[in-house]
Image (tube, rainbow, N blue to C red; front, side, top):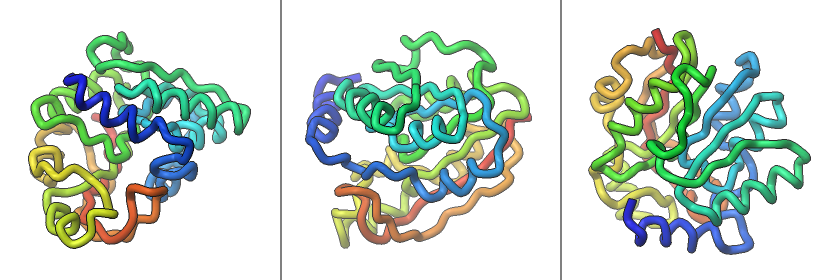
Length: 207
């Protein structure tokens, strides 16, 4: 991954304030509530707000990101709440997760560069056991229109990094979708997710 991309996230997460707040994403919080705790993975987890919430619920938590500053903030947050998480820094192919290691994978605004996003999804699929769950929320391709009206809502400005329902179905072909929808929501997450935006949300179980 390009050094400039890593530097961008290190700069964002290097400030004292938590960029997207300390509270978990609302959709994730709602969907994880009914699940039996097991082993869970958070890709592109940033400052750890969702990973720490899962650890508080009793999950065995793994997370990764390209930003060391993100990890530092996540470790700080974990210490505050007296929980433990396994947080690694690096690109997915170098992190050595094992096939069918996880019971759940949570992708919350995990906008990977366009050239690798489908590859990452298909790689993550290998790490989820059969019957495991994916929880997903991220900006849709329609979100470009919302950014043009209000940059404070956040999200990538490159449409190739955003998602369509057809892309999701293609990347997660061996899943039964319990929920899959494109919808407009109002975000209030820290400094960088504020206002109306278009998102895709899904919960899917691996066949």
